[in-house]
Amino acid sequence: MFIYKAGVVGAGAMGAGIAQVISFSGLPVVLKDTDQERVDKGLAMVRKVYQGRVDKGKMTASEMDQKMKLVIGTTSYDDFKDCDLVIEAVFENMKVKHQVFQELEKVLPETAIMASNTSALSISQIASAVKKSDKVIGIHFFNPAPVMKLVEVIPGLQTSTETVDDAVAFVESLRKMPVRVKECAGFLVNRLLLPYLNEAAYAFQEGSAPADEIDKAMRAFGMPMGPFALLDMLGLDVCADVSMILYDSFGPRMKAAEILGEMHKNNRLGVKNGIGFYVYDESKASDLKPVVDAIQAKTGIKGTPFSPERLVFQMINEAAFCLEENVASPSDIDLAMLAGTGYPQDKGGPLHTADAIGIDVVVEKLKEFSKQLGPRFWPAPILKRMVSANYLGQKTKRGFFNY
Ligand code: 3HC
Image 1 (cartoon, helix red, strand yellow):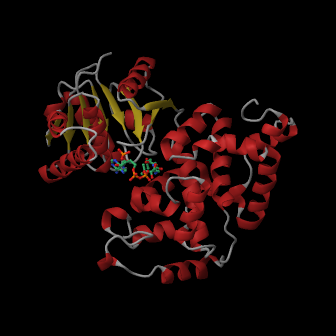
Image 2 (cartoon, protein in one colour):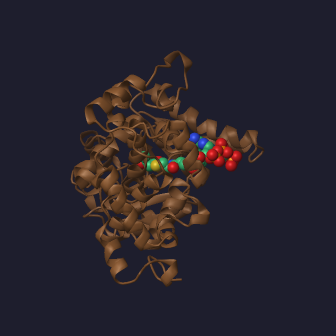
Image 3 (spheres, rainbow, N blue to C red):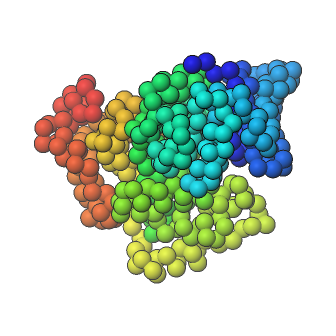
């Protein structure tokens, strides 16, 4: 199926970023939000990305104008009537998503693909609200969408093979890297990334190390930005929503650190409103210490040791759970983390990291963390099976990969 025109519902940071990516590939794209002010804000975000390219000499001002002409701002669903594919990027509320998909189904051509950019909600549940559920699929971009190469393609229970193939071809046409992921809460990358960010939050609230030191340590490990800078960029409201969805699906091992909920409650949402773990607007500066003290008084846990492994092993363990559930292949899991989060190239991804460390060492360390920090570290069953079969990683020439 050829996509001649695309659409995006929701002109926030992700929606605008996706519209920029689509227009950059040369396709016209309709960008819709509920009122003109939001639409204009979205269009301004798209222009800002192009302006950055013009300023760096990567494109001329007239090329930018050509690209901007491809982005059609609107407040009406009627403008989607000749779109072949629409991506929904509204906030994470199932009721709202159902309304959006029902509106889309009324106006779109029969053959059109209806995609969701949801971070963690069920694609199958979203699809249940429409008749043409075979046309519904997850097409999940990563923040910032203009930069991050990865796009997860997630079929729901009702999605047809044709829709999956068309979605993959569409993502490739945007010069992004599609990875097919079996549906589960958080899909693949958020399912690995959130436990890592959550562990950083536990370390912070337990007074293991200050946020800037943890960020520095993780940059030294090779991550492009530290976990707190990333939490602030993603938005503490978004992270709280995703954490809740993960907890609901996977239970206690994904219980969110108390500080994440407190940040949301105290309206410390991150970059978007000027204050999160860091201060971006001095007029909003306030001390987090009383919040942390109150959490420590409630949990009785403080002074736990910090190490980068504490965070990385959460990612490795969840990658092993994903593998066990066939969410993706070992190479796709590693590729997705490289392209979706900037996981250090030289370490090859969390599963390659585990193979380099030694699966037996990973299991022992997870058990130790489990005793010291809590049962959320209990090793995924596949890891123990690998040890018992001498799949220890590089040292025995076979682990998640062959050497
Ligand atoms: N929009 C557009 N372009 C941007 C941008 C933005 N918001 N932020 C950075 N860029 C561009 C810069 O202009 C620059 O472009 P150039 O190569 O043409 O000069 C390029 O990206 C690199 O930027 P910088 O040199 O300023 O800084 P970095 O090299 O540190 O890169 C980063 C910035 C790409 C954000 C990098 O730090 C990174 O990869 N961070 C990790 C982000 C991540 O993990 N994202 C996934 C989060 S999970 C998610 O989104 C899922 C959701 O469902 C919650």
